Structures are given as C-alpha cells and as structure tokens.
Length: 286
Image (cartoon, rainbow, N blue to C red; front, side):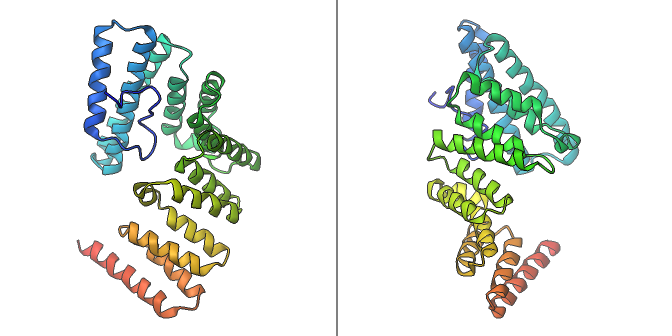
C-alpha cells in the first residue's frame, strides 16, 4: 500500500487521504502487529501508523460533528488513551524514532487543558526537540515546535521570535510547503509586520491547492492584512475571493462591508450588510 509510509504524517492538516484509506492502513498495521514477525523498527512503524490514523479519524469526526458534545468528549478521551498507548509502544520498541517522538509531541499539544494554555507546553517542546536531535532536517518538527512556542495565552516577544525562527527553518527545508508559509505569515500578522505577513500568505496561496486555500480561509486573512495597510482595492479583491470560496462564512460579508466603507463605497457596504442579515434570518428560521 503506497500510503503505508513512514514519512507520511496522516495527521498533517489537509492531507489528501480518505477514511477508507485510513482504515485500510490500520488493517495493515494490525496484521503486522498481530503476526509479530517483523523487526522491532517495523513493528514500531506499525504502531505509529495506527496511532496517526486514529488521530486523523478522530479529527474528522470532530470536524464533521459526528458526536454530540458529551459523547464526543468521552469518545475523544478514550481514543486519546489508545493513541498514546500505541505511541508509547512504538517508542518502547524503537526509542530513537523521531516520527513517534514528534507525534507524541503533537498529541501533547492537541490534548492540553484550558489551564495549560497560560504557559508553554514543555513536554511537547521536549518531544519536538528530541525528534530534531535525531533528525535535524525534520521540517514538520520545526513547524510544530515553532507553533507551540506561541500557542498559548500571552506569549512573550521572545517566544514569538522562536516561532519565527523555527518556521523559517521548516520553510528552508521544505520551501514549497504552503502550510509552513501560512503559519509564518499568520505569526507575522500577530506581530503587526503586515508586509512580511502578506508576502508569506501570498507564497502559501501560490503553493497551496484549491482545497488548502478554501479550508484555511487564507484570502480572508490576507484581505484583512491589506486593510491594515490601507490597500483597500487589494483587500476587496481578496475578501471577494474569500466569500466565493467560503459562502458558509457569513461573517466574511461584514469584513468586506468594512472595507467598502473605508473605500467610501457605501452602497456596496449596505448590500453586503443586507445580505448578511438575510442569511442570518434564514439560518434562524431553518
């Protein structure tokens, strides 16, 4: 099976893989684990693949709203325990597996509690760092460690700088990865460095697929950045594209309304606001 691959991280956002393919990979991993004839390294890969697939399936459940709030959180807790068990087994068999270390770090990030959001997740940082010590050109580990440095309430400027540094390394290693440019671009926007942010978001759009551009709402983010620079013509173009790609995001109409108001186009601003109200009324009546 071509997608049963050590270097393929199924949990990576927007990876093109179906539920059927994920379940097929789990079946292959289960067979390897059950027969127990492979080397420790290959057995560790089987546990890693199963953990990644389960985490990806759980993300899909959450995104598609397959569970009620209570049932989902119970299910997530149980699945999290399974994923952690499989990753621990992989590292028991092959302690120096950077991919398993990186995945354990991501699991630490994904399951952090609200109270942990006020400080750095040291366990996750250490996992990513350990993965990089074993695999210095591991772009995904740089990306995830970089995001973790600023993925909590009130990060310090020094943490933001570490994020930029790690994301820059990820881009150096994989210069055609749209997500890494998008992540660094958003970080620049948080730092109010709008020109750098726009440059990175533009690279992300250039390298990203239609699905990527749709799911990340990247045109909306770049449009807002153009608004901050008072480049209203480009802002309106981007915001119009964001509405075309994501007609389900009614609030995007309000962003474009604001851009029209700033540009002195009151009739168009009113049309956007009226359309927003019409859609909201339709949602309430439904």
